[in-house]
Length: 265
Image (tube, rainbow, N blue to C red; front, side, top):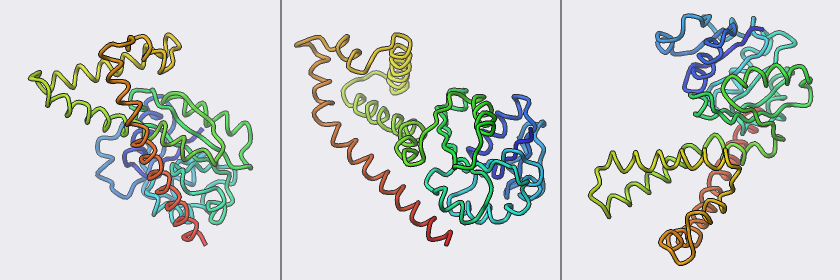
């Protein structure tokens, strides 16, 4: 099976390198050729998008949302009839994609945690995608972590929970560390190390022991204790912040979807 990757930016590079190092035959093209200077030697570097499209059985289009439809128009008549076209933009609907291509299409949203093979990768399929196509794509994505299939209308919130979440979590704990610095003389690097390792270990504890968030709170926040005082602040004040966060990010997704729909007409 030949895997094609158009675009060698952050996600395109991650997918191409991971697939190639796993022994897959990967063809790649990018506008910025300098990005390929440090690419694995196993990659098959092509001179154009159409050259990649000509040989790919599964073709990932890893370009900016503003460029997605134009790239698909460029390669549509070159790609093989049975090629599975995979968009890494969850906001551009299958309806919009169908306006520029008749190929089988899927949408995939990986996470930056794919770098350590622990991505929670979302996937959704257009109606024309066959079960054997799904199996091949799932096996390929399994190289970088878990694969989660969702209906198209849930890809937005799904993306917030797995693809955007590393950024949300990092920003939250950045705030935690900055606030802690105001109340201690512990060195900054040590604060970050303590919080980061505790955060990671808490996640592993919950997964390995099948614990809920409230299970952990109950274990640590004894009645009338110090932790209970802190967790009460979080439960009282943090929900409003998260409601605003999701409200704004989902609104941005709707704007992106509407813009792509107009562009596809």
